[in-house]
Image (cartoon, rainbow, N blue to C red; front, side):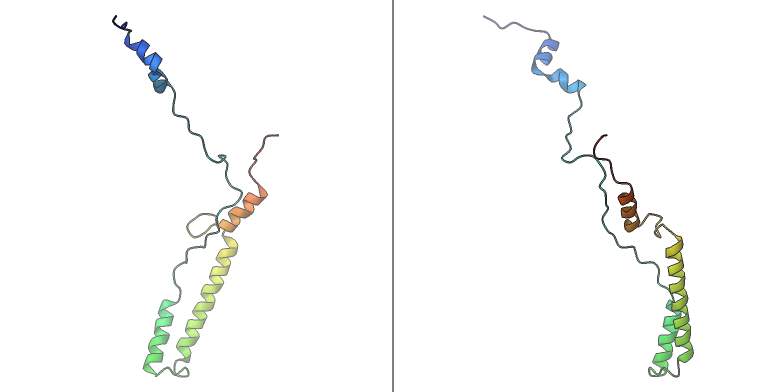
Length: 124
């Protein structure tokens, strides 16, 4: 005896193919989808070097005078003045700006904010 022939929609319905078209795949996360209460501690990128010209003038003077400090006192003083001025500018910039040189918050400031405002992990 021959098997009955069913329409195509019946075979799709019986085999479960019709469900695959209508339902998206189920994704189950391994951890809860919430932000952490801290971020990784990253170091700031080093900025551009300061006082390079003063340093190179000082070293050229040393080379010409057989590394004698008394002959190059003016160049050494100029270099130290430049270093002091650059250090003062860097400290003022750190106090004024809350953002890093790239325009983002530093990791320590993000951690402070996350400690102040932790993630809500349960509903009240």
